[in-house]
Image 1: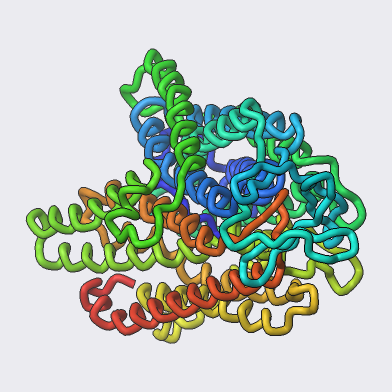
Image 2: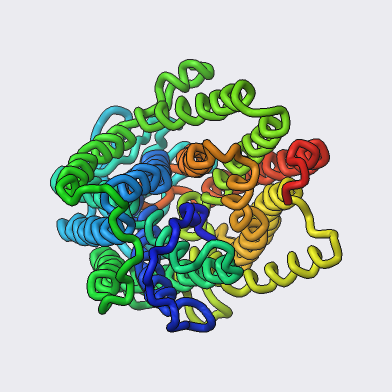
Length: 602
């Protein structure tokens, strides 16, 4: 995955710094920054590979709550760097910000470890107004859920018409419950739920200080005009993908196991993420002076304000907690509420995201119209159009951590050539693997096309990306017709989706930040960069809403009817694919007028 957060604008290098030592032709400090970023991303993406399944299977949240909370978390992760970057620029400097962020994120992962130590939530079901305790027996495909009614133990079976049957031991139906009369739930310990949300809040705030500022330090390694800069960032981003690749295999392995081995428990997966984050902090804290002169406190900033910044960040953790708690309490509005009713019923985070993004785009354009010349205004229009289409891409691409992970868990045969099986969380490693494998090839492709004068422009690349993400979902939908009697598709259909999505990602993510800096009016480039980050944060939240439309009924963390589950995902993914490909074609059609508005920017 090429991380869409990207890099902040590099600061000017300091005088007197030693730049003689090299690492693969680059400043030697790049090696430490590369390793630090790899370990930080190891922790983050390892935790993220577990999060959706952890919410659904351990805490027994409904699909709507699970995907909404996941989307809200990733949205804040992409929004808080705006504040963390500002605090570094004004007060702390990049180096202190990175260290502080690493500490908060490590603590967050440790808190998530403790959130799993109190045992899983206890499943129950409300049947036509009466509550029944649910017992779960077996595991994997042999997992069954039971209720006790009038002294008889009855198995719960979901039907294709969304009714529920309670079956006796001989398979006969003891009770038929109409659609809507069966409501699954989970009894969660308030302490461990508190720890869950607190851990997520720590990670969110810590990420805001860490992520933008380590990229800034990479920029400081190179003098202005140094042609090695782009290659240096390419190497740096390889650390992101290598870290995420290994963590998305190892963290789920420790948490839930593989094959017949049931793993050590959720705590072990989060502990490994915490260990990765701790290594990242150690590399920065004990750098042996290698980073002296880089990422230092800005000129004129007083150390006396550091504690105020730290306390302010800690005070933001309860705010993030309240936003997550509000997301957990969200209930969909009744049918027929209309657009206004839907917007009014959104959780606080949803209202903030929608209002901010909807206000930012026209607001900046209005300012540009009155304060820029005709050429500058037209370039800003092109930038805003591309930012809007970028939001669509990430809203669909980021189904990977939510609806696609749940699909992998429920309707995918996880066998690898019949030799062994992987877990649903580990399927997210496909994206990182394909990015590592394909990024050099795409780099050579663009270079070759550029030499021949036929490299696609930015709008065309964005359009190809949107068509590609839709094609990936369509490929998986095609694979569902080959599902077996167990209503599961082969793992390689899901791998094929990630291959197509990775190629689409390489058409949009690496050029996005560059596009913003090239098309923005110089005096508001920082504001435009903030709008870019805002668009990604907004997309993450919308991704949670989209994933919620694929919600299926579960009891004790297991779906009640795999056929209904497969049909639900197929329907949702078909809709996603058609909309994405259609929107991509619209952007390709707009590429010609957008090219004129861009005035030669490539």
